[in-house]
Image 1 (cartoon, rainbow, N blue to C red):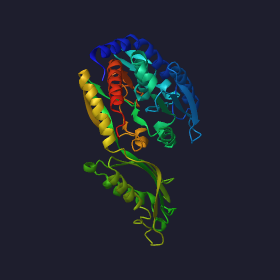
Image 2: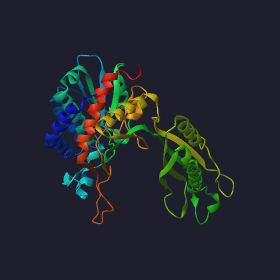
Image 3: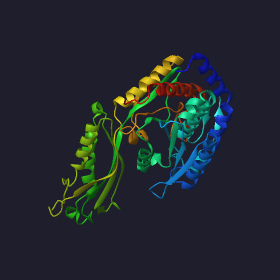
Image 4: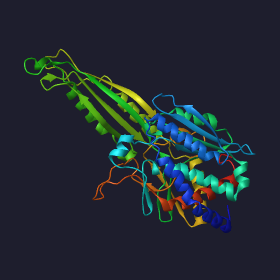
Length: 416
């Protein structure tokens, strides 16, 4: 654990370099890296590689499995010892270029906030990784040079593709001490929240086959697919169990063509989330049990609707686990040394940590503080506000991470 004098030296260095760090962030924010804009994602990847090359990192890019997206970026700096620490961020955002233009959503500093696409999710986190490494290089070069640093930046994290997780797993050796995820971590005064668990998610596509008929002259021959879908949706609604942190959301519904025709087809998309693995598994079971549900038929008895449920994606939960808890304890001890309070958070949204926690001790929420992630609109009355980064969080959060990493290296492998 660094002494008070070293901590103060690091603080002063970070504050002196803040203009440079913010210039890096502005460069990143000014590149549109919407998930479905692979050219922009790749441009950001190249700029990020150039930035970290200043610290001695070499770059490797790998095309995402889905050709609609860009190239994942891996940056590596080999140290003198075999011990590794992995730092995780992503390149993509959720904002198409036309949305940024329509809402005048660009780099904009107002007092202690910087607004712009990706400022908090997650380009600010990438800059915080750079600040961590830059501080170590400057004030603890022995540590910086000894450790092998592996940085992974996902090209399509926002669309929940899972090939990046597999690529990371292949690069994280058994001697990887920790996987540190730089998604936003909220700060209020001297209190910080770090993420120790995240819900898993399953997505579903539901189709109902009905039977078309003329709504006026042959109504009794029709089997209404929309009515059957309504029954399916009603059952899904009752699957939600807040006491178990299990939620289902029917996100889209479509069906029919015109009002004078009994609809022969309906479809819906559903998302399910849960923290607990057993609860998650039961939720999947309940959804699949809706297959072949047939409770609505034609009045003449000739045809009964049929329901089909298809799983379109699964990301397993990241539950509370001993390895993450040991990492959290290190960050809490580091916080105490700095006069901070570090609290745990179990977050409903996904991150790349969902794919990595079972393989390497993982802690999340290590990025800067801010607000309104994924929001591009603003209104004069203040009820709509754009995504922003809270500038005063940059130096304290970096100090916390530097102090904790040094403590982690004193302890060694968490699993030992």
